[in-house]
Image 1 (cartoon, rainbow, N blue to C red):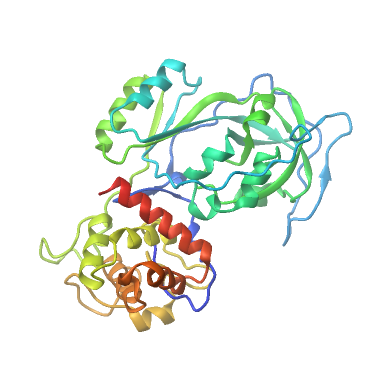
Image 2: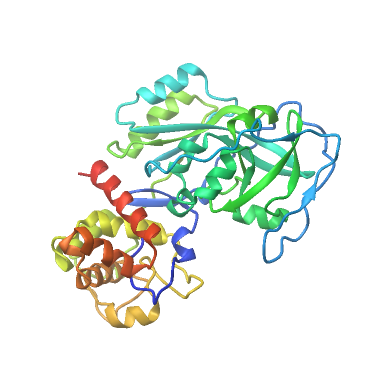
Length: 402
């Protein structure tokens, strides 16, 4: 989770959306670390190799390009323009699970019926070819899947509108490596060859996923139906949750826990009991001590959005560092030593960074709530979308971690 700190007008830190981040409060892990292979599967009846190819070298901007043969039908939205529905909520995944052959109806019912499961989503997936190159694709419902991705991507309306209207979209790194150009048409080949317009790219937080398509196109390409899913069950012991899901999936199922360990002890020599032992405790203690009246959930939301609770320590393109992504100039003004530590304030140490963020927010009036809180968050990062994301995620935390 990351900070709300002043960034000298920086509209948004790239480090904030480091992509790894589907969180669970008290711990966060990048899906990039996921060991399961969602895409050892291949779309049924995939042609040996499709003609055409991704345009090499995307360059500095994504401009229109075309790379499709005339004898393949182009796929769209049945002639009707589509606009993605607005982002409804932010959901915090606890587990990623995979059933290589696809989830049976009975398994889906059992998973949804597990005690403590508040949200669950499933999606299609398989290996296909894009312009003749092997890629991993998943098929999703844009209206629901967007709630499970990194907040910055979830808020990108154009990304989800492109997907909803039948275009394919990509993970940033995959778009770069494939040389995809926005507006260009590319042949996707699975069970059938379809020429599809490329919309745009964004961080997905799912290492190993190259492309996203909507459900209609997923069916045409022959992706494996409901091959994987995400579960959010914040009130359940992760060990118990994993065991129960494993029993339902059986021996062929694969599970990856998305909760990370507690923050590292920066200075192991301190006496026991002088410091919080988890991020959730750190957010609560920092709010209580350095900004009474400020909900700890605001600090938690900032910490998640900025660095996924220390998973991406920067530097950002603007030079922001640490779990709360302070600019060094801002850190010199607001950085403090807290929780019994010694030495100068350490921008990379969560036990200094989180209290410093609370202190700075408080000076901006965050404890007064309402408009004052909004303005304090805006001062931390000058973007209205950022404030909305922080408040939405804070509200979610408040509901799930009373």
